[in-house]
Length: 130
Image (cartoon, rainbow, N blue to C red):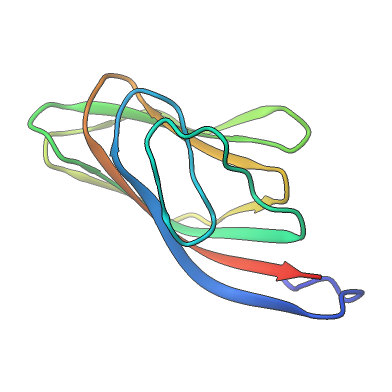
């Protein structure tokens, strides 16, 4: 995806982020290259940014099975579920490798079905322009 032609300047940066010790509270992923605290729901894709998610790693840290859900809230307000109640076994890893594109105002959220302990790692391209 290209930075819009009418822009004066822009950047395209490969970044990573995620959540450590995610539980059953909804968490919105930050797109600034840092880890998000579990239950943080104040994160949104900044204006004039296009986020292309390359991969998502979900790793169960405990000895019990878990299920997780990823959904996107569009800047217009509607929720779109990307992964719903995906099961993951004890000490296992789930990998999502299909690209997802988000624009300014969108939110990418995750929650667990139970009060588990899951680490999440997200790799993405951050395109911005001014």
